[in-house]
Length: 407
Image (tube, rainbow, N blue to C red):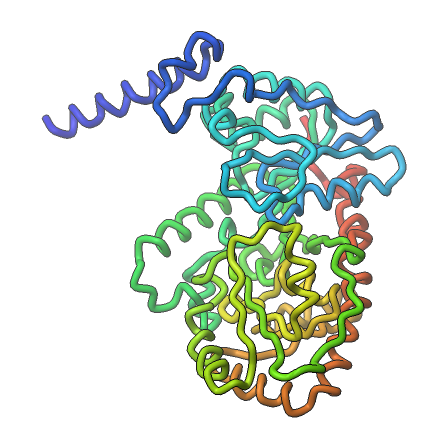
């Protein structure tokens, strides 16, 4: 009897939510639960497509402004226009996007979702879906597969791009790296949810058969047929004339957006011990707006990225562009793949939680050697991460040469 009652409540809840989504916003706005309420004036008009032959819509994650950066990069191509989109949650870092909507309206406004769906299907030729997340919110009750099949049936080319935990299998990673954040975790529920999400997204990619890109080569271990689409930064934003490893003690910066995934707990005991004895000036940076980060890196000597995943991300790229010395833990598979594609070796000093102290001591003892490594950073970023390579990678999708799904 209890199960029947619980099931009935769920069905009523689903029916109530769908009724709210299908009715006009002006009729339902007062009946929504507090977390899903929004002001009608906050809901933007549907997106306006660019005036180009190839029109790319990128949504909805915009992690570290990557959707925005890729949109600007592909617009260097002739007759290509792009629009990046992101919902705003109130906990954002101020990353730019071409089109924004409050998260509450994105989740709850059926009127917006249907309008945006129709505007995209009629006005764009290509859609790149970030992190396998819903693009049209309430229009399809945030069912990504239904959204993408709807677009494909209407003749749009669709591709997916994964950035990390949306595709990375914790079980696979835990076996491959002793420092994995998924190995021996006390929070088993967290790991279980990530595993389920990654498996679900793998099924989505397999069922759709669309092109799949990954922003770090480490994810190729989870999807070998994917294509590496390098992260993009504007080198000029991060360039600085600030000298490196001149003063004492050196300034060491660590900016963990996700401390567990970055391995912050694994390295901070070493950093605190070295800081206490005056060997370095350790600064942990959190919740800092994106616009403030260039000056923080310019004031640093050493930037620590991550020590648990085996890959480098936007933090390393921005720091290399600023000519800072980057220290992180990279898998050999990552270095080999990048060298194979670009002919270049990432100028990132290797360290694990076990070796970090010794590596930092060596940097302090041999500053000139490490200045030379850091000096290769701007050139590397210009060659690999300024958008030129990423544009070349995505051209086959935009031109139809990659077997993109079309109706």
